[in-house]
Length: 315
Image (cartoon, rainbow, N blue to C red; front, side, top):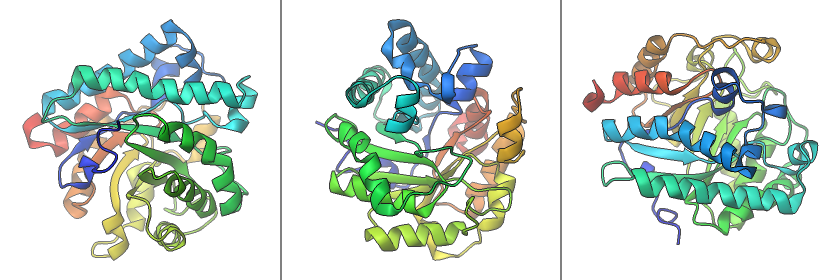
């Protein structure tokens, strides 16, 4: 039975940490080959599973030491039909990978969870296409496309599903609708360009409002990921009601644009301490943002710096 599916603890007013940029860490720091930027194939071998466990343990240790909660996201951002086909995985193989990834995180939760560090198991979903380029699906098509992955997670003891790097409102609506149909709590995380808008040119406020309107407010909450704070801060204004729906951030380490990062052959890890200070300022201005992690270019050092800047016990 899912432990938190009916009562997500991150909805209460307490801090939760999340991991950093999984794929960039594994590629650039661990030297692991990830074709098509996909980490889920590591689940297919004992060695790969161990590499993933070691990755998660670094972050879980920070959370337990700082007495914060933790969101454990599966390594399944690319585990959908189109990317799976490119990597030689059919629908049944993807189902097994998605379900096994939850089992891996449940093992970690049993080892690391304490009353002060609740660990939420989250099935991670990514866009059908490139996270840096706007897709072309309508909402109904997106719901049908992502339903299999959502349903795979729903059959396990996962607490929720989380859609990361959404760059069109239609795909966000589709995933939220698929989660609603499967009775799974859902988080939607949008990414923005350097102008603070989605790749389609839509404002972040409008994307969140439209998703809520189309799904009767079914997402449990929203986040922002895969963009540097200097990119999205301009889209956030104190006192605006829609920001009450935004509960967290997983920012990039680099202030470079998506296009620049896409073409880069080296890792821009930015400045962890500077990122921590920016998160602290973000929290001061927008107290609802309680889920803190990283995205491309970040690793456990960045999350530790964010924790030190934002969580009194860790100072």
